[in-house]
Image (cartoon, rainbow, N blue to C red; front, top):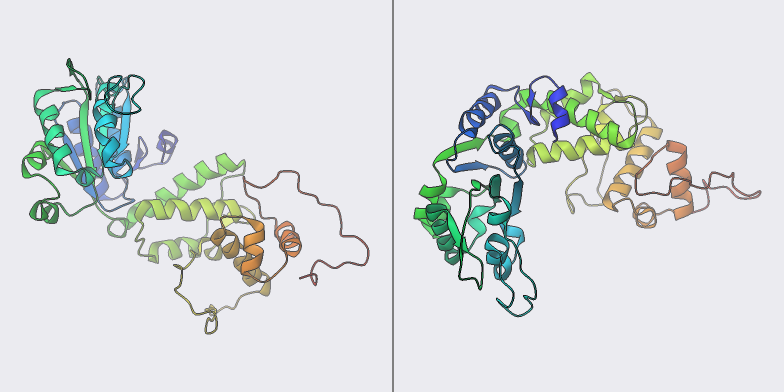
Length: 347
């Protein structure tokens, strides 16, 4: 979500707050933005913890400074200290130049430490010292460096279990948990689904150079009924796919179908669920092609193999259905097939 979503009612700096729970999240974030106290944001994966951290930064006196984001789980432990604190030339093998760490880069701004529980206890001890002393040493350095970074930490882990298992130091937990903000899962704030859909549809339509589609009543009912285990991120991906592949300017229920998890169906026993009103063969064919493209990351030769047709026939079907994707060549050959050939039967 981006700042552009503020055009949608109920959205503040990218945070959709139609539900009472999210309105309270936004209110708390704004109240604490002006102070320097550390904030700990919790919630399931995909609930928007990074977006709320950005809201705190934007509404703080540090909004003019850098908003530095670090996913602690994505950095190898051997590199984590260097990324946090920086290093001097010769600090270790391969350190042939000075490196500024995130604490230094975020000074005067905000540093988001996402997946904070994934840091090792040894590095947690060093992090605790920085939070307490507001200074640190680069690796290999002898000069202390002061930092004015405001720290926001986030995790999707159960903090009680992390404390009991020793994955999170108790002293670091209390230092981080000065102000706690919990983001509820999307299934518990379904009032936010419709404004989120409008926000995502507008953004992706702009990215793809298309008119902004609207969601049909049946389509919205489909979205409201889904449990959204992937939360807002899953909804965002669903709308991106729907806007990209839909025909016309209305998103119908079949445009919003999500792919099943890998291995969830036996090909020999698979059956389509026929709605009470029936389905056209064209709709089924289109859904099959779209599902194959999604599974194959829109690599056409791989998608063709999944549904047992040639790449040439799949290209013909894609053109006939009007499917597009930013990664495909813009100037696809649209010449009619040569005499004596039939793309529909050339498998």
